[in-house]
Picture 1: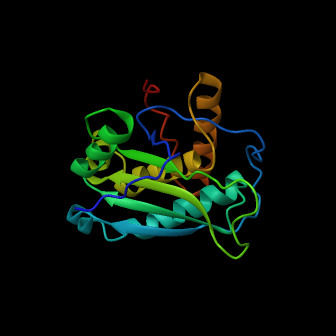
Picture 2: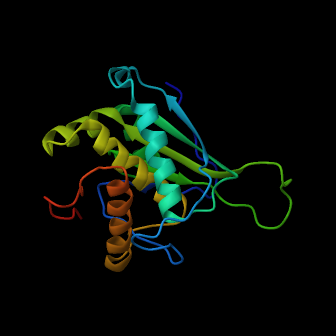
Length: 200
C-alpha cells in the first residue's frame, strides 16, 4: 500500500482520541456563514472500505457543512481524505507522532505559503486527513451509533484541524467540541459527546 508522505512543516493531529478546539473569528453558534466548499478528493487505499459504499458522499457532506458553519474561507482550497486501514494509519501515527498504534483519524495541515510566489489561479492546499476503517467501525459499534454518523464526526474533526483548530488546552478543546456539535446538528447527527466523558 502506498501511503502519502507529508511534506516538511506538516504536523499530524490525532482525531477523536483527544478533544478539540476553536480558533478566533468563527461565527459562533447558530450563525451560518456562506462559504464555498473546498475541493475534496477522497482516496480509498484499503479494501475494507468497500463495505461502506456511501463513505465518500458522507465525507463530502460533512466537510462541506463544516466549511460553511465554521465560516472557513476555503473555496479556493483543496484537501485529500485517505480512507485507510488500521495498519496504514498505525504507520502514519508511528512515523509522525511516535505512537506505534492505530488511531481513528489524523490530520496533516499543509504549510501555507508566505508571500505572493503562488499564482492566483493555483488552488491552496489545506492538507490531508487519514481515517482508519477498523478503528472507526469499532468505535461506532462500541458507542452504538451509526457508522456514517461517526465517520461524519471524524471528517469534521479532521477538517477543523486543517483550518487551524486544535485541542491543546481545555478552553480550545471546549470551543472546538462545541463547533463540532453545531456542525453535526446541522447534519441531523446527535451530539457525539452527550453520553460519554471527554477522552484524554
